[in-house]
Length: 159
Image: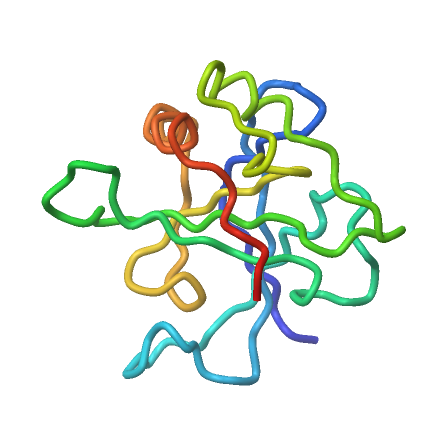
């Protein structure tokens, strides 16, 4: 059996509960990591869908997308350990995911329904590539992530 490896990641529950740490499981990926052209480390596919309520079952990584946070607005240099936000895109019943109340509260007056983060959001940390060099995050990452989420809506779903 392929070895599952977990990394500490931050979960922002959509129901308004406080963000908290979860074990983000990863499994070996058969294809090379598209973000690390010369990586010697094998790519690993994360499984944030485990923490995403109402997500379509059996689709694996096709049911969620990700967005990279490499720096905050105004920073001259990228983070040494950037972040990857995993968010659900295909629901079980085809309906939109509920607006994430936790992030809505963080955004306060900046909240815009058209760009609202929806469903449970999982945010992990990585070194060089999000799929071959994940690292453990901690609750100490919360202020940085709160700062980012305060001013950034969800990525556009237009393909």
